[in-house]
Image (cartoon, rainbow, N blue to C red; front, side, top):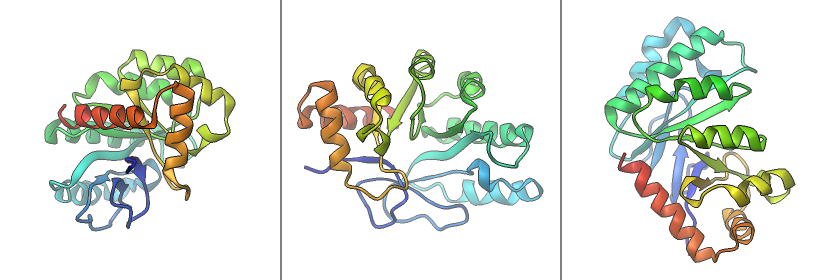
Length: 208
């Protein structure tokens, strides 16, 4: 059985969504493309958006990573401009958004009403309350390697609705089957059933 990797940085991994680096040429396999908060260049945003918009092909499954990050040097107001512009692009090309968020979850939630497509927080590893507030605002949550050992995160995974869940490796090098096995155990369902739900969720977000 193959296991879909919702968000990864491994160019040769074909079954999943490969997040391409800023400035790169998209591959022939499924990918996401966006301007990460750490890559924002305030003096060349026009060129950055030109790269983004000119590289959205049929293999592009999502816009992102994009979002807000309190740990990078780019001023918050510039990050918000770039984030909002990518939300508008997502609306225009009818592709979901993959969100990078560091300590700005409630700011990200405030932008949710502007998005017409599905919105997925990647690499979620925060507290139950934040998870609940995101779910109330129609976000999907994608979980990574931390679920294998983070007990409070395992509790969140136990309780998240199956129709709001994705799994990913991000930039960690491990076999995603381990994560699927752990989550199937936490949810009390078979590996096959979990895989089926993930693929149904993928179809849902792709079809708007």
